Every structure is written in C-alpha cells, then in structure tokens.
Image (cartoon, rainbow, N blue to C red):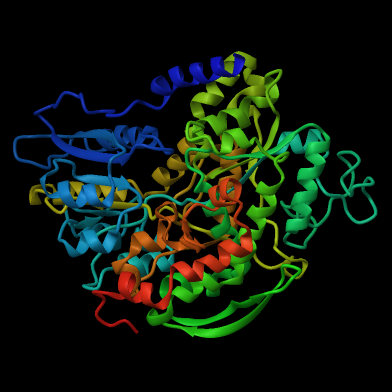
Length: 574
C-alpha cells in the first residue's frame, strides 16, 4: 500500500512539474508579435529546457521586427508524443508546427519527400551571425553550429545536395544504472587483489579497489565488475545481503535488447560495430561455430551491401551479449519475474521501485536499473514525491547518487580495451518544409540560439542529460546538478560514443530496421517454427537459450530475406 501511495503522489506531481500533454497549446496568440510554433517529443526530456530557451529568446528579440507591423517574438511550445515517421509523412505538409525536436524518424525519407526545410545557413554560419543585418556581431560565439558537431553527424546530416535539413537533438544511450550510495553502504565494490573479504569485495570504505573494466586503478570504474563473471558474482553477493540486484520494465522488455546491442558495441569496438550500418569493410569477429564451453570460433569476411546481414547475425559481440542476458534471466533471485514479464509494469514503475525501494519497509531494495540516459529526468516526479515523503536530505534528487555502470567485458582478455558507448534513438531537430519564407530569418536565429554554449549547458542543467555537441559547463553549473547529471556530463566529455548513422543506400532506405530495436529487425530470430524479436521474452517465457537465439538470427535474416526486404528498391547495392 505504501508503494501505491508513492506512485500515486508521483503521478500527481508529474502533471504539475513536467507538464501534461499539449503544453503551450492553449497559449493566447499575441497578434502584435511574430509567432514561432515549436514542437518537442513528449517523453523523458520534457519541455522545461525549451521553456527556458523560449523565455530568453523572447527577451533577446523583444525589440526586433520579423514582420511588417509587428515587433518581438512569441514562441509557442507544444509537446507531442505522436511524431512517428509515418505520422510525419502523412501530416507534416499540412501542419502549422514549424520547428521540431523529436526522435526515431527516417531523416532521408522525410528529406527525399521534400518535407524538410533547408537550414544550412543556421548550421554553417557562425553563431555570431545576425540574419537580420546579414553580418556578424561582437560578443557572441564565433564558431558555427556545424563546428560543434561530431564528424559522423556532419557527414550524415549533410544531404547529397550539400545542404542540411536536420541536426541531432540529444545524446542518448541505454545501460545499467547503479545506486552508488547503496554500493558504498553495502560494500559491493570488488577489492584489489589480496585486499578483500572471502568473496573478493571491499571490507570497508578504505579498502583498495580493483581496477575495473578499464584495467586501470585510480579511475571512475574502480571496484566495478570487470567481466561478466564478476557481474554475476556481484549479483550473488547482493542476493546474500537480501538485496534485489536489478530491475527493468515489463511493458517494454525490448529495453533488454538494447543491453545486448550495448554489450555488442563494447565488445566489437567502433570499427567492427559500424559495419552493421555502413556495410562497408572487413568484419573480424564473425562466428563460425560455438564450442561446448560457450566460447566461439571466428572468421573474417569483407562486408558489402550484398551481405550486410552477416554482421547482424554472426558478430561474436551479439552472441556474448545474448549470453549475458541468458545468465541474468536464468537466476530469478536477481530480479522480480512477475514485474519484468508484466505488460502493466512500465518504465516509471521500474524507476519508482529503484528509487524508493530502500525507504519502504517490505519493498525490495534494488541495486541496478536497466534504462536510458534520460531516466533521471523522466523520474523527476518520483524524486519529488520521495523527497517529500522521506526527506529531501536523504531521498530527494540532489541527495541521491546514481551512475551508469561501465559495461563489464565478456572475457578477461577484453579487460582494458576502450569502452565504446552506442548512441540510440536517432534524435533530430528539423524545420517543417512548408515554412512560410517570411519566417526564414526567425527560424534560423532560433536554431542557432538553441545551440549556443549557454543553451546547450542549460539543457544539461535542466534535463541532467547532454546534447551531442562540443560545449562546456561552469563548475557552478556542474555542482548544481544531482550526481547523475554530473556523471552524464563527465561521460559526454570523456567517453567514446558510436553513432549508428550511415549514408549507405541500404541504411538510408531501411533506417528504421537498422536502428529501432523495438521493431525487432536486428533481433529477429527463428527458433524452430517460432520467430522471436524480444530477447528476455524468448528466454524467460519460452526457454530459448542464447545459443539458440543466436543461431536463429541467421535463420530469420537469410541472404534471400536480405535481398527481398532490404535491397529491393536500392539502386546500387554494392
């Protein structure tokens, strides 16, 4: 009953704190000003960051005229969850919304249909360029928005005609979140060799910790599991302390698919993993056979568009990722089975259980959560409710410490290799192709304004997540965030992120199949007469093993299927 009360309170706070659907839709139009209609995806990032930009933008341009007889700008913000590629294709041309921040759309599909507006000037001109006077102004950033972008994003978003019709919206990845405070209190870190207890864990807070997956001492992953074996030793240790090691949401069990891909990425490294999207290069770790002890025999092969399915179905990293999930779900003491198979157990329920469990008598104390980098902002109502009920000084967002656990390595020989993080969700900022030309300058000013260092840092301060651009934050801004935000900014600044974007014709024609884990394309596995697309469901409910699931990938995506479903309609396949 206590748990239900916290969830109910969180639901009440949700509408008050982050806004319910349609935020800004009822705002009265001020006819003395020029309106700019901006839509953002209604999800984990909320619209608070956009409201802050809106306020500053309106203030800065209060005396500027973008239309005859009008002065100033009125930015009208709307949140919308229904922004799928299909919906945009059907409705964008007739929509009155002008600037979009969203995710999971096929950029080149929309661009090829003429539905996106050319924003090249906003991307390539320096941020101190004034579109009204067509000149640069002093006191502003001289770098261009393009200059802040990662190379892979510049290559992808610059269309074949050399123009930009979109840019990345946010930086995101899935992973294993852990409760830092719980790990310290319960002494859940691995000790340096010879320094630990009988199980190899630290004896107290002063015990020297192991090197962690990066193989180096004195770094942020000290004491964390270096290998899969270590991870499950950790889970066993947590169970012995009457803790529940991990949870994830049952409504979207495909979150676990993303962990397989994350583990695959870290195992393969950028060069090999990129072949899944570029279909161009030599794959080094394709599985020829699986040994009785679970190890694999591998071979190399040149990948082209014609045989791109081989990386989807044969990479050793995917097999090892499946083995990790198999070991995890096989031991029901590690998680609550009734939750992770329940379609009514949503991501917010898993977040709530993770955040509040240790404060509620009778509820499990959970050490880890499988979720995305936006989870902390998404759980803001839960943090507010917990802080109000149990005390801000112990349960509020600013008092709690959470971080992404660097993924453990599949085998000991991989310890010390660079940690590679897979970017997910294909986020995008774009302008509606039906934009009235008289708003050209206004829109470009707004796009640039959203990507100044001030606005980028503000986004991180507000959402505790990052954008995939080069920017800095002050010590005051960093210290004002909860621990999670500080950790995300550290990862943004230090870690290696790998993008799925590719301009290969096969990718451009099938972007949703290549990147959307929940459609099942990259996880389609035929075992016997049954085709599976969700890894934990197949393993928990149908008893499918990692080896069966892996071998089933090649049964589902054959050369014939690849030719029929992926290469058809693509001009130059090779």
